[in-house]
Length: 482
Image (cartoon, one colour):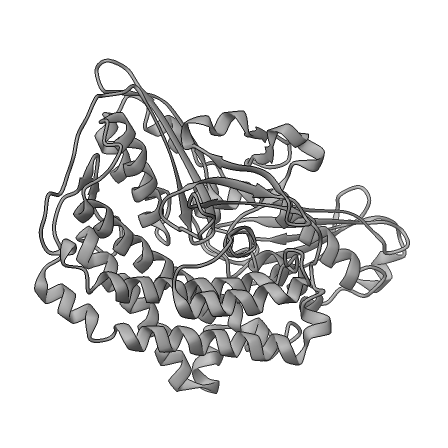
Protein backbone atom coordinates (compact mmCIF):
# COMPACT_ATOMS: atom_id res chain seq x y z
CA UNK A 1 0.00 0.00 0.00
CA UNK A 2 2.86 2.40 0.85
CA UNK A 3 4.60 1.78 -2.50
CA UNK A 4 1.37 2.28 -4.36
CA UNK A 5 0.88 5.62 -2.63
CA UNK A 6 3.87 7.09 -4.51
CA UNK A 7 2.20 6.46 -7.87
CA UNK A 8 -0.44 9.17 -7.47
CA UNK A 9 -3.84 9.83 -6.04
CA UNK A 10 -5.71 7.07 -4.29
CA UNK A 11 -9.31 6.29 -3.42
CA UNK A 12 -9.83 4.13 -0.33
CA UNK A 13 -13.24 2.58 0.32
CA UNK A 14 -14.53 1.19 3.63
CA UNK A 15 -17.63 -0.76 2.66
CA UNK A 16 -19.66 -1.31 4.78
CA UNK A 17 -18.89 0.44 8.06
CA UNK A 18 -19.16 -2.15 10.83
CA UNK A 19 -20.85 -2.27 14.26
CA UNK A 20 -23.61 0.12 13.24
CA UNK A 21 -27.21 -0.71 12.36
CA UNK A 22 -27.56 -0.93 8.57
CA UNK A 23 -25.15 -0.46 5.67
CA UNK A 24 -22.97 2.51 4.73
CA UNK A 25 -19.53 3.05 3.26
CA UNK A 26 -16.69 5.56 3.52
CA UNK A 27 -14.59 6.81 0.62
CA UNK A 28 -11.29 8.61 1.14
CA UNK A 29 -9.57 10.49 -1.69
CA UNK A 30 -5.83 10.79 -1.03
CA UNK A 31 -3.47 13.00 -3.10
CA UNK A 32 0.06 12.26 -4.28
CA UNK A 33 1.54 13.42 -0.95
CA UNK A 34 -0.74 11.31 1.20
CA UNK A 35 -3.03 14.20 2.19
CA UNK A 36 -6.77 13.62 2.55
CA UNK A 37 -8.51 15.59 -0.20
CA UNK A 38 -12.02 14.38 0.54
CA UNK A 39 -13.72 12.01 2.99
CA UNK A 40 -17.36 11.02 2.66
CA UNK A 41 -19.76 8.78 4.55
CA UNK A 42 -22.22 7.35 2.01
CA UNK A 43 -25.60 5.77 2.59
CA UNK A 44 -26.12 3.79 -0.54
CA UNK A 45 -29.37 1.93 -0.04
CA UNK A 46 -32.89 3.09 -0.77
CA UNK A 47 -35.65 3.30 1.86
CA UNK A 48 -38.88 4.39 0.22
CA UNK A 49 -41.36 4.11 3.09
CA UNK A 50 -42.75 7.55 2.30
CA UNK A 51 -44.02 6.00 -0.94
CA UNK A 52 -45.00 2.63 0.52
CA UNK A 53 -47.62 4.20 2.81
CA UNK A 54 -49.31 6.29 0.13
CA UNK A 55 -52.80 4.93 -0.49
CA UNK A 56 -52.87 3.09 2.86
CA UNK A 57 -55.36 4.05 5.57
CA UNK A 58 -53.87 6.45 8.12
CA UNK A 59 -54.46 4.18 11.12
CA UNK A 60 -52.20 1.59 9.48
CA UNK A 61 -49.22 3.96 9.51
CA UNK A 62 -47.96 3.20 13.07
CA UNK A 63 -47.70 -0.51 12.20
CA UNK A 64 -46.23 -0.02 8.72
CA UNK A 65 -43.50 2.54 9.37
CA UNK A 66 -42.14 0.69 12.40
CA UNK A 67 -40.91 -1.88 9.83
CA UNK A 68 -38.26 0.70 8.94
CA UNK A 69 -36.10 -0.90 11.59
CA UNK A 70 -35.73 -3.91 13.87
CA UNK A 71 -33.68 -1.98 16.43
CA UNK A 72 -35.86 1.06 17.11
CA UNK A 73 -39.34 0.18 15.77
CA UNK A 74 -40.95 1.58 18.91
CA UNK A 75 -39.73 5.07 18.06
CA UNK A 76 -41.33 5.04 14.60
CA UNK A 77 -44.44 3.32 15.97
CA UNK A 78 -44.93 6.09 18.55
CA UNK A 79 -44.00 8.97 16.23
CA UNK A 80 -46.56 7.79 13.67
CA UNK A 81 -49.16 7.24 16.41
CA UNK A 82 -48.59 10.81 17.66
CA UNK A 83 -49.07 12.17 14.14
CA UNK A 84 -52.31 10.22 13.74
CA UNK A 85 -53.44 11.54 17.15
CA UNK A 86 -53.49 14.94 15.44
CA UNK A 87 -55.55 13.53 12.56
CA UNK A 88 -58.23 12.09 14.88
CA UNK A 89 -58.28 15.32 16.92
CA UNK A 90 -56.77 13.77 20.04
CA UNK A 91 -54.98 16.91 21.22
CA UNK A 92 -54.54 15.55 24.76
CA UNK A 93 -54.41 11.83 25.50
CA UNK A 94 -55.93 10.25 28.57
CA UNK A 95 -53.48 9.80 31.49
CA UNK A 96 -53.46 6.05 30.81
CA UNK A 97 -52.79 6.51 27.10
CA UNK A 98 -49.91 8.92 27.58
CA UNK A 99 -48.26 7.06 30.46
CA UNK A 100 -48.41 3.67 28.73
CA UNK A 101 -46.76 5.19 25.66
CA UNK A 102 -44.11 6.87 27.79
CA UNK A 103 -43.33 3.60 29.56
CA UNK A 104 -42.98 1.90 26.16
CA UNK A 105 -40.67 4.67 24.97
CA UNK A 106 -38.42 4.62 28.03
CA UNK A 107 -38.12 0.84 27.67
CA UNK A 108 -37.02 1.37 24.05
CA UNK A 109 -34.49 4.04 25.04
CA UNK A 110 -33.07 1.90 27.84
CA UNK A 111 -32.54 -1.22 25.74
CA UNK A 112 -31.22 0.64 22.70
CA UNK A 113 -28.66 2.69 24.65
CA UNK A 114 -27.48 -0.42 26.51
CA UNK A 115 -27.12 -2.26 23.20
CA UNK A 116 -25.08 0.51 21.66
CA UNK A 117 -22.70 1.15 24.52
CA UNK A 118 -21.94 -2.37 25.69
CA UNK A 119 -22.26 -4.33 22.45
CA UNK A 120 -21.09 -1.87 19.77
CA UNK A 121 -18.86 0.84 21.24
CA UNK A 122 -17.41 -0.55 24.48
CA UNK A 123 -14.88 -2.80 22.64
CA UNK A 124 -13.24 0.34 21.17
CA UNK A 125 -13.19 2.17 24.49
CA UNK A 126 -12.08 -0.75 26.66
CA UNK A 127 -9.53 -2.41 24.34
CA UNK A 128 -8.34 0.57 22.27
CA UNK A 129 -9.03 1.77 18.75
CA UNK A 130 -5.95 -0.09 17.46
CA UNK A 131 -6.70 -3.39 19.19
CA UNK A 132 -6.74 -6.48 16.92
CA UNK A 133 -10.09 -6.85 15.10
CA UNK A 134 -10.73 -10.20 16.81
CA UNK A 135 -10.72 -8.37 20.16
CA UNK A 136 -12.92 -5.44 19.17
CA UNK A 137 -16.27 -7.19 19.63
CA UNK A 138 -18.76 -8.22 22.27
CA UNK A 139 -17.27 -11.73 22.56
CA UNK A 140 -14.04 -10.19 23.86
CA UNK A 141 -16.11 -8.24 26.42
CA UNK A 142 -17.66 -11.52 27.57
CA UNK A 143 -14.23 -13.14 27.89
CA UNK A 144 -12.69 -10.16 29.71
CA UNK A 145 -15.56 -9.47 32.13
CA UNK A 146 -18.35 -12.10 32.08
CA UNK A 147 -20.23 -10.41 34.94
CA UNK A 148 -20.36 -7.05 33.15
CA UNK A 149 -21.35 -8.71 29.88
CA UNK A 150 -24.17 -10.57 31.61
CA UNK A 151 -25.48 -7.32 33.09
CA UNK A 152 -25.37 -5.70 29.65
CA UNK A 153 -27.44 -8.51 28.15
CA UNK A 154 -29.96 -8.37 31.01
CA UNK A 155 -30.26 -4.56 30.67
CA UNK A 156 -31.29 -4.94 27.05
CA UNK A 157 -33.62 -7.82 27.96
CA UNK A 158 -35.30 -5.68 30.62
CA UNK A 159 -36.00 -2.88 28.15
CA UNK A 160 -37.45 -5.41 25.72
CA UNK A 161 -39.72 -6.79 28.47
CA UNK A 162 -41.03 -3.26 29.10
CA UNK A 163 -41.81 -2.97 25.39
CA UNK A 164 -43.55 -6.34 25.33
CA UNK A 165 -45.70 -5.45 28.35
CA UNK A 166 -46.87 -2.18 26.75
CA UNK A 167 -46.81 -2.88 22.99
CA UNK A 168 -47.75 -6.58 22.99
CA UNK A 169 -44.50 -7.72 21.35
CA UNK A 170 -40.79 -6.99 21.79
CA UNK A 171 -40.41 -6.09 18.10
CA UNK A 172 -43.06 -4.46 15.90
CA UNK A 173 -45.70 -4.18 18.61
CA UNK A 174 -49.20 -2.78 18.18
CA UNK A 175 -49.82 -0.95 21.46
CA UNK A 176 -50.13 2.64 20.25
CA UNK A 177 -53.18 3.48 18.13
CA UNK A 178 -54.57 6.82 16.90
CA UNK A 179 -55.87 8.62 19.97
CA UNK A 180 -54.22 6.47 22.63
CA UNK A 181 -53.29 2.90 23.50
CA UNK A 182 -55.00 -0.49 23.11
CA UNK A 183 -54.42 -2.03 26.55
CA UNK A 184 -53.63 -1.43 30.21
CA UNK A 185 -50.56 -2.75 31.97
CA UNK A 186 -51.46 -5.91 33.85
CA UNK A 187 -50.72 -6.25 37.55
CA UNK A 188 -48.58 -9.29 36.74
CA UNK A 189 -46.47 -7.34 34.24
CA UNK A 190 -46.12 -4.40 36.62
CA UNK A 191 -44.92 -6.62 39.46
CA UNK A 192 -42.56 -8.50 37.14
CA UNK A 193 -40.93 -5.27 35.96
CA UNK A 194 -40.97 -3.56 39.33
CA UNK A 195 -38.88 -6.17 41.11
CA UNK A 196 -35.84 -5.31 38.93
CA UNK A 197 -36.41 -1.56 38.53
CA UNK A 198 -33.88 -0.54 41.20
CA UNK A 199 -31.27 -2.90 39.76
CA UNK A 200 -31.69 -1.41 36.30
CA UNK A 201 -30.96 2.07 37.69
CA UNK A 202 -27.85 0.75 39.47
CA UNK A 203 -26.54 -1.00 36.35
CA UNK A 204 -27.11 2.11 34.26
CA UNK A 205 -25.02 4.04 36.80
CA UNK A 206 -22.35 1.34 36.52
CA UNK A 207 -22.23 1.78 32.75
CA UNK A 208 -21.79 5.52 33.11
CA UNK A 209 -19.04 5.10 35.72
CA UNK A 210 -17.11 2.83 33.29
CA UNK A 211 -17.47 5.37 30.48
CA UNK A 212 -16.41 8.28 32.69
CA UNK A 213 -13.42 6.34 34.00
CA UNK A 214 -12.16 5.51 30.48
CA UNK A 215 -12.59 9.09 29.27
CA UNK A 216 -11.06 10.60 32.42
CA UNK A 217 -7.91 8.49 32.05
CA UNK A 218 -7.50 9.56 28.40
CA UNK A 219 -9.16 12.96 28.57
CA UNK A 220 -6.75 14.86 26.34
CA UNK A 221 -7.09 12.36 23.52
CA UNK A 222 -10.72 11.22 23.75
CA UNK A 223 -12.41 14.57 24.34
CA UNK A 224 -10.51 16.05 21.37
CA UNK A 225 -11.30 13.12 19.09
CA UNK A 226 -13.71 14.26 16.36
CA UNK A 227 -14.41 17.57 18.11
CA UNK A 228 -15.96 20.41 16.11
CA UNK A 229 -18.41 23.23 16.79
CA UNK A 230 -22.01 22.76 15.65
CA UNK A 231 -25.61 23.72 16.26
CA UNK A 232 -27.80 21.31 18.25
CA UNK A 233 -31.53 20.47 17.88
CA UNK A 234 -33.88 18.59 20.22
CA UNK A 235 -37.37 18.76 21.67
CA UNK A 236 -37.86 20.19 25.17
CA UNK A 237 -40.78 21.01 27.43
CA UNK A 238 -42.01 24.60 27.72
CA UNK A 239 -39.68 25.19 30.70
CA UNK A 240 -36.69 23.68 28.86
CA UNK A 241 -36.79 20.31 30.66
CA UNK A 242 -35.54 17.30 28.69
CA UNK A 243 -38.47 15.24 27.41
CA UNK A 244 -37.83 12.23 25.18
CA UNK A 245 -41.51 11.65 24.34
CA UNK A 246 -43.13 15.03 23.80
CA UNK A 247 -42.35 18.74 23.53
CA UNK A 248 -41.55 21.45 21.03
CA UNK A 249 -38.41 22.02 19.00
CA UNK A 250 -35.41 23.99 20.25
CA UNK A 251 -32.17 24.81 18.41
CA UNK A 252 -29.01 26.25 20.00
CA UNK A 253 -25.79 27.44 18.37
CA UNK A 254 -22.22 26.41 19.12
CA UNK A 255 -22.07 28.79 22.11
CA UNK A 256 -25.38 27.61 23.54
CA UNK A 257 -27.44 30.61 22.42
CA UNK A 258 -31.00 29.80 21.39
CA UNK A 259 -31.62 30.02 17.61
CA UNK A 260 -35.32 29.16 17.95
CA UNK A 261 -37.45 27.64 20.68
CA UNK A 262 -40.86 26.04 21.20
CA UNK A 263 -41.50 25.43 17.50
CA UNK A 264 -44.64 23.29 17.27
CA UNK A 265 -44.66 20.18 15.05
CA UNK A 266 -47.15 21.70 12.59
CA UNK A 267 -44.67 24.52 11.88
CA UNK A 268 -41.49 22.46 11.39
CA UNK A 269 -41.22 23.20 7.65
CA UNK A 270 -40.72 26.90 8.44
CA UNK A 271 -37.54 26.01 10.36
CA UNK A 272 -36.11 22.78 8.93
CA UNK A 273 -35.28 22.06 5.27
CA UNK A 274 -33.44 19.22 3.52
CA UNK A 275 -30.69 19.28 0.89
CA UNK A 276 -30.08 16.49 -1.64
CA UNK A 277 -26.52 15.64 -2.71
CA UNK A 278 -25.78 13.35 -5.67
CA UNK A 279 -23.47 10.90 -3.86
CA UNK A 280 -25.85 9.74 -1.07
CA UNK A 281 -29.44 8.50 -0.78
CA UNK A 282 -29.62 10.21 2.63
CA UNK A 283 -30.66 13.87 2.70
CA UNK A 284 -28.88 16.68 4.57
CA UNK A 285 -31.29 18.61 6.86
CA UNK A 286 -30.45 22.16 7.95
CA UNK A 287 -31.94 25.04 9.93
CA UNK A 288 -33.74 27.02 7.28
CA UNK A 289 -33.11 30.55 8.60
CA UNK A 290 -29.33 29.83 8.72
CA UNK A 291 -29.07 28.24 5.26
CA UNK A 292 -27.25 25.12 4.05
CA UNK A 293 -23.71 26.22 4.92
CA UNK A 294 -24.27 27.30 8.53
CA UNK A 295 -27.54 25.59 9.39
CA UNK A 296 -26.47 21.95 9.77
CA UNK A 297 -26.86 20.55 13.28
CA UNK A 298 -26.49 17.53 15.55
CA UNK A 299 -29.27 15.54 17.26
CA UNK A 300 -29.32 12.66 19.74
CA UNK A 301 -28.06 12.29 23.32
CA UNK A 302 -25.34 14.95 23.03
CA UNK A 303 -27.78 17.48 21.54
CA UNK A 304 -30.49 16.71 24.11
CA UNK A 305 -28.18 17.07 27.11
CA UNK A 306 -26.63 20.24 25.67
CA UNK A 307 -29.95 21.86 24.71
CA UNK A 308 -32.10 21.18 27.77
CA UNK A 309 -32.19 23.35 30.92
CA UNK A 310 -32.44 20.39 33.26
CA UNK A 311 -33.48 16.73 33.59
CA UNK A 312 -36.40 15.93 35.87
CA UNK A 313 -34.96 12.78 37.49
CA UNK A 314 -32.43 13.25 40.31
CA UNK A 315 -29.53 10.97 39.39
CA UNK A 316 -29.53 11.92 35.71
CA UNK A 317 -29.73 15.63 36.57
CA UNK A 318 -26.73 15.37 38.89
CA UNK A 319 -24.78 13.65 36.11
CA UNK A 320 -25.92 16.26 33.56
CA UNK A 321 -24.47 19.05 35.69
CA UNK A 322 -21.10 17.27 35.91
CA UNK A 323 -21.16 16.61 32.17
CA UNK A 324 -21.92 20.24 31.24
CA UNK A 325 -18.90 21.38 33.26
CA UNK A 326 -16.73 19.77 30.54
CA UNK A 327 -17.80 22.55 28.17
CA UNK A 328 -16.72 25.39 30.47
CA UNK A 329 -19.93 27.34 29.87
CA UNK A 330 -20.38 26.24 26.26
CA UNK A 331 -22.06 23.09 24.93
CA UNK A 332 -19.86 19.99 24.86
CA UNK A 333 -18.75 19.39 21.25
CA UNK A 334 -16.68 16.18 21.36
CA UNK A 335 -18.13 13.38 19.24
CA UNK A 336 -17.07 10.78 21.82
CA UNK A 337 -19.03 12.72 24.47
CA UNK A 338 -22.09 11.15 22.81
CA UNK A 339 -21.31 8.00 24.81
CA UNK A 340 -21.26 9.90 28.11
CA UNK A 341 -24.53 11.69 27.29
CA UNK A 342 -26.10 8.44 26.10
CA UNK A 343 -25.45 6.80 29.46
CA UNK A 344 -26.90 9.79 31.34
CA UNK A 345 -30.07 9.18 29.31
CA UNK A 346 -29.91 5.48 30.13
CA UNK A 347 -30.07 6.39 33.82
CA UNK A 348 -32.89 8.86 33.10
CA UNK A 349 -34.91 6.19 31.26
CA UNK A 350 -34.44 3.71 34.13
CA UNK A 351 -35.52 6.34 36.68
CA UNK A 352 -38.60 7.14 34.61
CA UNK A 353 -39.52 3.46 34.27
CA UNK A 354 -39.23 3.03 38.04
CA UNK A 355 -41.38 6.12 38.63
CA UNK A 356 -44.09 5.08 36.15
CA UNK A 357 -44.39 1.56 37.57
CA UNK A 358 -45.75 3.12 40.79
CA UNK A 359 -48.46 5.01 38.86
CA UNK A 360 -51.99 3.51 39.15
CA UNK A 361 -53.07 5.15 35.86
CA UNK A 362 -51.23 2.38 34.01
CA UNK A 363 -53.61 -0.25 35.38
CA UNK A 364 -56.98 1.38 34.70
CA UNK A 365 -58.65 4.36 33.03
CA UNK A 366 -59.80 5.35 29.54
CA UNK A 367 -57.49 4.19 26.78
CA UNK A 368 -58.37 6.54 23.91
CA UNK A 369 -59.79 9.95 23.12
CA UNK A 370 -61.03 11.53 19.88
CA UNK A 371 -61.92 15.00 18.63
CA UNK A 372 -62.38 16.86 15.36
CA UNK A 373 -60.84 15.04 12.39
CA UNK A 374 -58.06 16.75 10.42
CA UNK A 375 -56.33 15.99 7.11
CA UNK A 376 -52.76 16.68 8.33
CA UNK A 377 -50.79 15.33 11.26
CA UNK A 378 -47.19 16.10 12.26
CA UNK A 379 -45.31 14.86 15.34
CA UNK A 380 -41.86 14.92 16.95
CA UNK A 381 -40.31 12.19 19.08
CA UNK A 382 -36.81 11.82 20.53
CA UNK A 383 -35.68 8.37 19.38
CA UNK A 384 -32.53 6.96 21.04
CA UNK A 385 -30.44 8.31 18.12
CA UNK A 386 -32.15 11.69 17.84
CA UNK A 387 -35.18 13.67 16.78
CA UNK A 388 -37.81 12.06 14.54
CA UNK A 389 -40.17 14.09 12.37
CA UNK A 390 -43.28 12.23 11.09
CA UNK A 391 -45.63 14.11 8.77
CA UNK A 392 -48.74 12.59 7.11
CA UNK A 393 -51.54 14.08 4.99
CA UNK A 394 -54.72 12.19 4.09
CA UNK A 395 -57.66 12.58 1.72
CA UNK A 396 -61.38 12.38 2.47
CA UNK A 397 -61.25 8.57 2.14
CA UNK A 398 -58.76 8.36 5.04
CA UNK A 399 -55.97 7.33 2.66
CA UNK A 400 -52.48 8.74 3.04
CA UNK A 401 -51.54 11.01 0.13
CA UNK A 402 -48.27 12.40 1.51
CA UNK A 403 -45.70 11.23 4.04
CA UNK A 404 -42.43 12.88 5.01
CA UNK A 405 -40.09 11.30 7.55
CA UNK A 406 -36.91 12.97 8.77
CA UNK A 407 -35.21 10.36 10.93
CA UNK A 408 -32.50 10.67 13.56
CA UNK A 409 -29.59 9.46 11.47
CA UNK A 410 -30.60 11.72 8.59
CA UNK A 411 -30.37 14.71 10.92
CA UNK A 412 -26.81 13.66 11.79
CA UNK A 413 -25.72 13.15 8.17
CA UNK A 414 -23.54 16.27 7.90
CA UNK A 415 -21.92 15.78 11.35
CA UNK A 416 -21.04 12.16 10.49
CA UNK A 417 -19.38 13.38 7.30
CA UNK A 418 -17.54 16.06 9.28
CA UNK A 419 -16.19 13.54 11.79
CA UNK A 420 -15.14 11.25 8.93
CA UNK A 421 -13.16 14.08 7.31
CA UNK A 422 -11.65 15.26 10.59
CA UNK A 423 -10.53 11.83 11.83
CA UNK A 424 -9.16 10.89 8.39
CA UNK A 425 -7.01 14.03 8.32
CA UNK A 426 -5.90 13.64 11.92
CA UNK A 427 -4.98 9.96 11.91
CA UNK A 428 -4.45 8.80 8.31
CA UNK A 429 -2.85 11.72 6.51
CA UNK A 430 0.66 10.92 5.32
CA UNK A 431 0.70 7.49 6.97
CA UNK A 432 0.67 3.92 5.77
CA UNK A 433 -2.94 2.93 6.17
CA UNK A 434 -3.60 0.03 8.49
CA UNK A 435 -6.77 -1.69 9.64
CA UNK A 436 -6.39 -0.07 13.06
CA UNK A 437 -6.18 3.42 11.56
CA UNK A 438 -9.25 2.78 9.43
CA UNK A 439 -11.10 1.75 12.59
CA UNK A 440 -10.55 5.29 13.92
CA UNK A 441 -12.93 6.52 11.22
CA UNK A 442 -15.51 3.93 12.21
CA UNK A 443 -15.12 4.91 15.88
CA UNK A 444 -16.01 8.49 14.94
CA UNK A 445 -19.10 7.43 12.98
CA UNK A 446 -20.08 4.87 15.61
CA UNK A 447 -20.27 7.56 18.30
CA UNK A 448 -23.40 8.86 16.57
CA UNK A 449 -24.99 5.38 16.82
CA UNK A 450 -26.25 5.66 13.24
CA UNK A 451 -29.24 3.53 12.33
CA UNK A 452 -28.83 3.24 8.58
CA UNK A 453 -31.77 0.84 8.44
CA UNK A 454 -33.94 3.77 9.50
CA UNK A 455 -32.30 6.21 7.13
CA UNK A 456 -32.39 3.68 4.31
CA UNK A 457 -33.65 0.15 3.68
CA UNK A 458 -31.01 -2.58 3.34
CA UNK A 459 -30.55 -6.35 3.31
CA UNK A 460 -27.42 -8.50 3.28
CA UNK A 461 -24.44 -9.48 5.44
CA UNK A 462 -22.20 -7.03 7.25
CA UNK A 463 -18.65 -7.12 5.95
CA UNK A 464 -15.76 -4.71 5.46
CA UNK A 465 -14.13 -4.23 2.07
CA UNK A 466 -11.18 -1.83 1.70
CA UNK A 467 -9.97 -1.22 -1.84
CA UNK A 468 -6.86 0.67 -2.98
CA UNK A 469 -7.31 2.11 -6.47
CA UNK A 470 -4.97 3.94 -8.81
CA UNK A 471 -5.82 7.33 -10.34
CA UNK A 472 -7.73 5.59 -13.15
CA UNK A 473 -9.89 3.69 -10.69
CA UNK A 474 -8.18 0.31 -11.16
CA UNK A 475 -7.97 -1.84 -8.02
CA UNK A 476 -4.34 -2.18 -6.85
CA UNK A 477 -5.03 -3.95 -3.59
CA UNK A 478 -8.00 -4.90 -1.41
CA UNK A 479 -8.73 -6.39 1.98
CA UNK A 480 -11.99 -8.02 3.08
CA UNK A 481 -13.21 -9.06 6.50
CA UNK A 482 -16.51 -10.40 7.76
